[in-house]
Length: 128
Image 1 (spheres, helix red, strand yellow):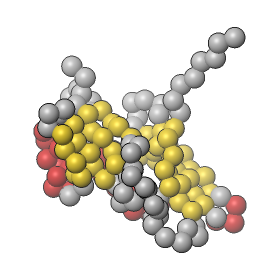
Image 2 (cartoon, helix red, strand yellow):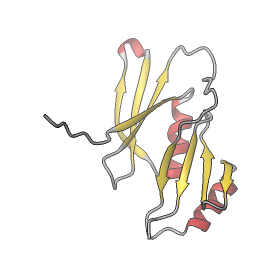
Image 3 (cartoon, helix red, strand yellow):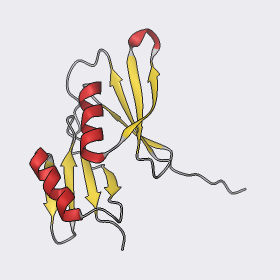
Image 4 (spheres, one colour):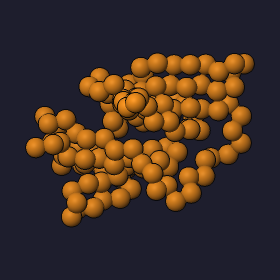
């Protein structure tokens, strides 16, 4: 028997829910698509989306997490591709002005931005 799957969401934990909601809306245009309040306010979950795909970023904020998250070497990352009508160089300059670019690879034509909790997000050019 064969099974078929499709991407649904990717989860990250964040220290400050509103700061993260603001960052993802401003830097990437990802807007809330769902919300869950945990029992007794122990956590909140927000699903963010792009209005183009069904993929969602799940951000979880634990009420009593004692310190910033240790991301280790942070070798995993989320990648977002620009829409064809967007100018890569203008968007990169906008992210530079925001002060969120943390790594650029000009040879590969990619760059990464860093969210308020230290997660890296790869920005890709639109597909030709």
